[in-house]
Amino acid sequence: MELQIHPSAVIHKDAELADGVKVGPNCVIDSGVSIGTGTILEPNVVISKDVKIGENNHFFPNCVIGNRPQTLNLSLDDEIGRLVIGDGNVIHEQVTIHPGMHPGTQTTIGNNNFIMIGAHIGHDCTLGDKIVMSNLVQIGGHCKIDNGAWFSGLSGAHQFVTIGKWCYVAGLAGITRDIPPFLTISGHYPPRVRGVNKRGLKRAGLDEQQQMRIFNAYKKLYRKKGSLLENAKALTQENGLDENVQAIIDSITKSSTHQYGRYLETFR
Image 1 (cartoon, rainbow, N blue to C red):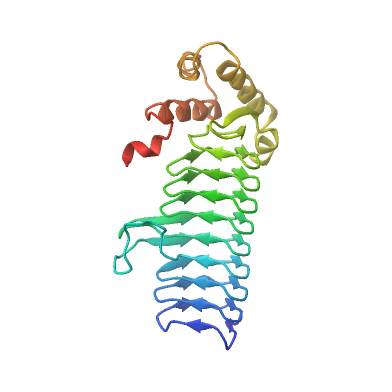
Image 2: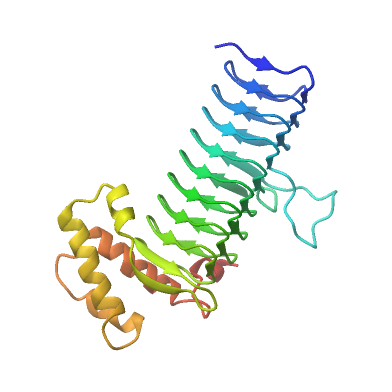
């Protein structure tokens, strides 16, 4: 496939664009950028310095990818980290994604994610694969979002939060603490676990037995008397725990090590 660049695009001489890349009108690509084959940049997309982009991504108009993090103590002269984006991502209009805040750090976006209009992903975040972010989702810095998580419109995550795989975050939810895998959450201050994400279990390809084990574990964790951590410790005593149930327990245990329920903040 042939490299296609609109005459109005501004591309730094050091940028590396593979064959098959399409760059639309008025795009700006800074130094140190690399873009894999099949990736499309529609009009007015900005790719900032040292961003690495894989193959077959689609950036819709007015995205700003890799610009400087929004921090008060960062001057224009300070060196910053990188942004690495995988393959097959669809990134819609006006999405902003920031790189790592310091040299040697990076924001990482996996593969086959679908990010809708106006979403923001802050510095030093790590996203897995097959994540969906609806319009205007806002993700604070240093968050980790595992495979298959689904965010409805106008939801947001506090910095250093971990969102487990195949979770569902309802619209307008404000996530301030870690969320174990496979669960549905809504509300804010505090957000609350409402149940198991049935659709997420199917999207994850889990069979009926695996799904039933997760439902049974949910009842023992969230519907029994006692604290969540106590219930998790009791569940660990059962023989032959399913790996997916163990993942839920591990998340609860880790988040309990921080006073606000954000495990990643223990490394701050």
